[in-house]
Image (cartoon, rainbow, N blue to C red; front, top):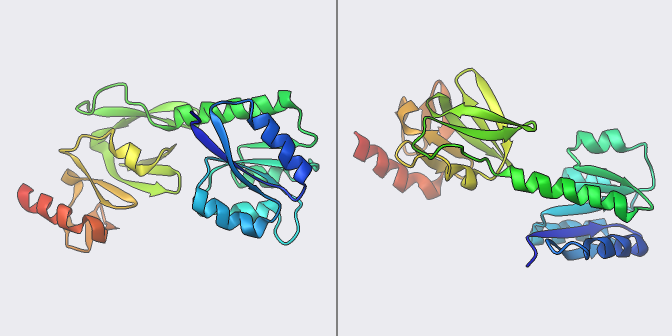
Amino acid sequence: MPNYTCYIVDDEPLAIKVIEQHLAKFPQLETVGHSTDPIKALAHIKQLQPDLLFIDIQMPELTGLEFIESIQNQPSVVITTAYREFAVEAFDLNAMDYLVKPISFKRFVKTIDKFLEQQQSSVPSATEPASSPYIFVRSDRRMVKIPLHEILYVEGVKDYVKIVLSGSRVLTKVSIGNFLELLPEDRFMRVHKSFIVPLSRISAYSAQGIEIDEMEIPVGRAYKVAFLARMEKNT
């Protein structure tokens, strides 16, 4: 059963076919769609939410680079193009890889290996149980120790979470929901779709917001009742 979904955007049908043939050799991957029209592809991607996107740069109406900038929940992106000169711009937009046509299967394998490695390491791994005073998360290809008592708040930013500590910040690629599972329930709480807070750090609160070290964090409508009940229980 496939673990990850892929989508292809290219104005050349033959180029799409080549990538589909390459992808078919990986049982972990499933091509869920493709399009030669970048405008239509934007709507498809919003609906399908693929894990991996292959996209050409030179296309009518919308270039591949403009396309990437238009995506809100950006998947891992692989640029496919006949031109080498756009590599710097592509990586500035956090493209995972840059494939120059014609794409050989040997080079394609390296791209997929890189993608699978990133996915396997994207969920932070705790070397200690949640009751431990710290966890380790992957950031910039290394494991970083996060003392739980130093966390001021955690903010979800697209496919990443930003861990704000006393004096530093750490960015790691994981959903905020998966990150919450690493934290002890008695000490941390999700109060918004984009924020997790340590209860002990709250200096003031209302039904609309929380104050932590002069930072004001919103309380989401869906989390308000549970948050207020939790705070009343702790007082």
